[in-house]
Image (cartoon, rainbow, N blue to C red; front, side, top):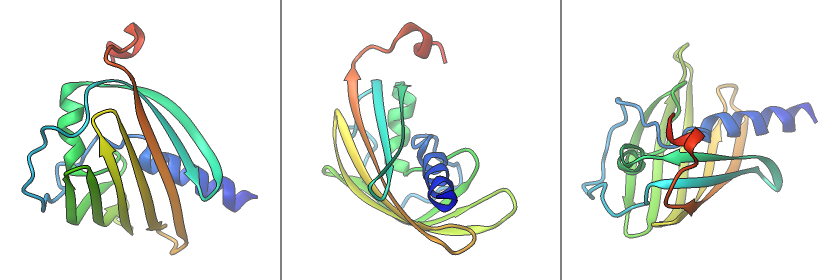
Length: 152
């Protein structure tokens, strides 16, 4: 049970800020960032295997939408992608996430998107070498963000 809780926590942390791309992320795709997802109020759901790992809502601004094509990355990691394709409704990522202690975890993700939804299937190995697979789904709830989220 502890391993499941740890895996759920790791997945939630790794995808909690999917649009905060690292400045060190290498972009391989030449597709423009435009025409991916729309700004607004979004709802996210996370699963590790069949186990729900959490959900949240976020206000995505235009700048966040521009980051979408650069791949998922949190502020806790440096993300380097050798494959980064976000175009024509498809997402394909392959690379590594490096933590602040320079520990490296290999990551792959694939999925699809529309202007108002996306799904990512994420496969990684933790820094301890444990395989971890999860799914993040997101949908746009509205074009306008609630006042408390819009201010963030």
